[in-house]
Image (cartoon, rainbow, N blue to C red):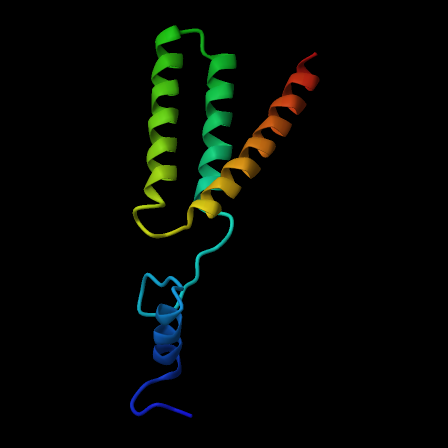
Length: 114
């Protein structure tokens, strides 16, 4: 039955809040497993570091890149939790998947170089 004055999405929002589901706007949006932002950041940033380290001759450039990659990755990954965008399991899953993707990429590149 329709509650008085409430549209379908408002009822769904209240039902999801009651059961601990997440929403971060007026429309219902559920958390996704794994965290796509974490997966993307932890796949791209190590790749950036790997490529810079293999091509840059300057130790200073390598160090600046390493610090940037570490800080950017940490803020992006850790920031997902307090922002309430993902559960810890979403982030852990993304970290594991991105580690596997990066390892596969690195192995393929190293195999082609030899």
